[in-house]
Image 1 (cartoon, rainbow, N blue to C red):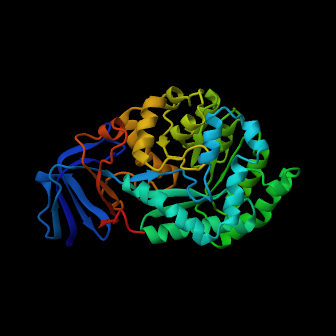
Image 2: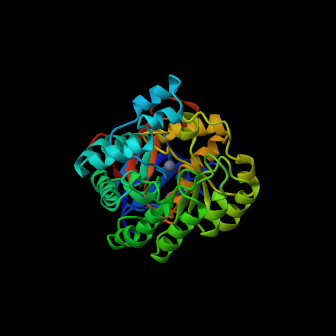
Image 3: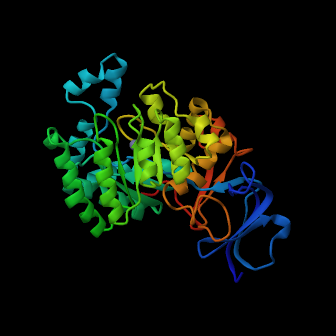
Length: 409
Ligand SMILES: [Zn+2]
């Protein structure tokens, strides 16, 4: 090591290394940061005697990899609070849809909003996630549903990354819902995605991945396969909203295309889970949507464990089914609702979430060579992150070895 830029000492470290047991704990430990990356990490007593520009004692605080929210839809116009209230007052989905509600309300509001309006509305959500310990956020499009508005959403997501200092991974989710103009010609919309939108997005380098919603009222597995084949030909990695409300073979479809992740999975079959294991696809579980929709069909957690499928947890932050802007709260819900262990929840928002974004080589664990994205916590043990609801346990957040101001815009 040449000179160390930042040396963190007197830390308790949960490395989340894949070879570590559970949290991969080192205590007391130290971390040396050079050029924004972890240069050394280990027991404090083994610390090399290299000079450091800045040494900081953490007074026994815990550090973990900064959290990664690998599934959000946090750029959108308007909100759906009134619809949420109407549903709880007894209105059915059909009544809400007949009154012009549902996802198309958000599509209308998103189309009507300027890029600046969308940016201003989304930034507080990004900041709330950062204040909960998140340094990397995936943001999907999918409320524009035409070329100009899908591009607008992705551009806003890119701007949010540049302005916040967080990493934003963008995902094109044009196949999210059928736009009203194509109600009677879904295949025509799929043609538009494949022939015009995907090439434009690839040319402008606006998306880091492509996602689709495979469900009876959205897109069939054949239609999703067409989008996926085109995306793959353009070199874009894939993700899938799979088997959330019924089993349409979404897990198998994601596996067939070696998708980075298959998300939701409440109704996936045993064969689907086996296929995910064989393809190395990450299962992303989304307790916020499960709770908001008051679903009862649990994702097959035991099968995922039996087959060794990596499990990630995310907020699914969106106005209709998961208005949730804290990743530790999502972890706490995943523990309570899906029965994940606290160690699984933390791995699911660090190591496995990085894998779900194709970023595992660069972040998600604390290991030499990885980015120094580090969350510092005022907790007694990493399990506390799942235990409490309604507290903010983050002390501070380092991104590439630098302190992030959690209130700046
Ligand atoms: Zn989603």
